[in-house]
Length: 565
Image (cartoon, rainbow, N blue to C red; front, side, top):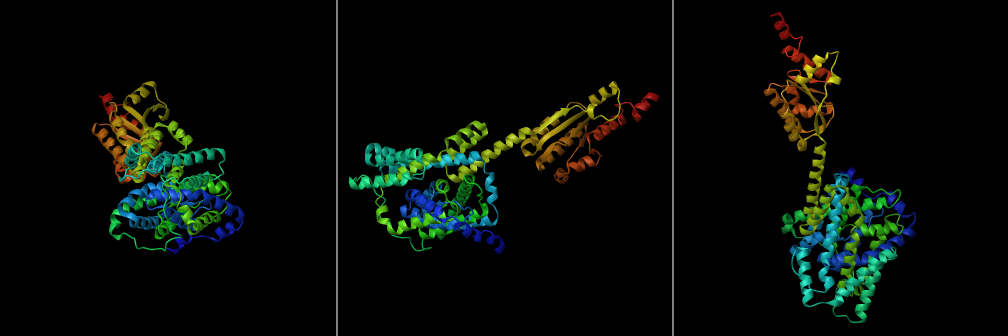
């Protein structure tokens, strides 16, 4: 057991990389911390546990994931996608539910790492990822509407319902101050990102909004509220043991989301650099450790953050020191600047998250998916709608099921049963009359592509409609794969044709397909009467001998007796 764990632990090479260019890493970490501060506060508030939970997550999870994770450039902390999962958990179970879910999710992630499951995340189709991201962006934006409009958040688990009640409350008693702050911060971030992408306009906009609210005594701009100066001591006091069974499904959702988003973020970071490659299993291990620890300090489950990771790469990060610096700077803020942070208006944080949600949507990628195929477009739309209307687990499952079903449909369409001319493979010299007689009594079919459950029944239908002939030759050298369903359907088709008095011969069965054909008794059915052949000419020669023996072709015993008579 120690061997697999040792492969997932930090190495001496990590320390060597951190010592190569510490100045660049320290500067990159400081920049990321400035960008991450309002996001950590905002996601903490959105989760329902308060801004302090977001900061605790950014510090604890950010540091541990940097040390134990599988990417040199990854930055972890609270994210919008995770917040979406946590809102109903916080509403129903409170801090105890979050702690329990985080611990279970951490254990699951570590188990996935030990099972080397990281490599399988690459099989998630791109339309599912894009639809999932679009849906999350919509949910994050809807979650911010109450704070952006300055109204009390209504009870309810569905973001559409909560947003609708907030809009109705705003129309009754409008809070223009909160709306102006939220729109102003969002507009500053979006415009600034186009004008000067390297400048952290989020922190500038939040500071400006806070100063304006304090100078003009804007009572309608509700602040975050008091923050504790420092991180709480690790504690299991809130662990909700009684709800373990009901919290297992949400914990699986948290673990799956942490794995998916973290590995996707690490892949994006690799693509932005030259020579950087992440270890997916070690990344899962690092996220598992981070999610075990963060809830103990009052935080929420965490994952790698694509936006913060991208900022880290763009500002010149070279090693894990940058992500560690980001966590250290946020820790200093927690201990030294809590009173100042507590004065930030909630509406300003809502503006930060609204802008973040808008920037999550990659219009170019959506356009590519929509134009690729109708199947890709359908998968994307269904995943996005399910994310908004249901929840993230059902959305991903639905997306994978739809993508899988459409892929199977496309593959099944590649399977073909074509009647082919047997004359080119006919051995020996033959007269025109004999060729005509052979063509009347023997028909050859070539099976192309996969013969599995999605295509097998269509194959049986086509083969059962064979015209009134005496011999059918199935050429199977181009069958790419065959499963148990395909083998059973083939056996059924042979038996049905035999009952009609039609002899079935096969040629070109691949060695890799013999096991499944043997296990279902299909080959035994053919071997018992010597009807399986290596090549098509051999099968045609056997078919001709059969026709001669039955007197349907000249040269057999029956035709000789008729001649003597």
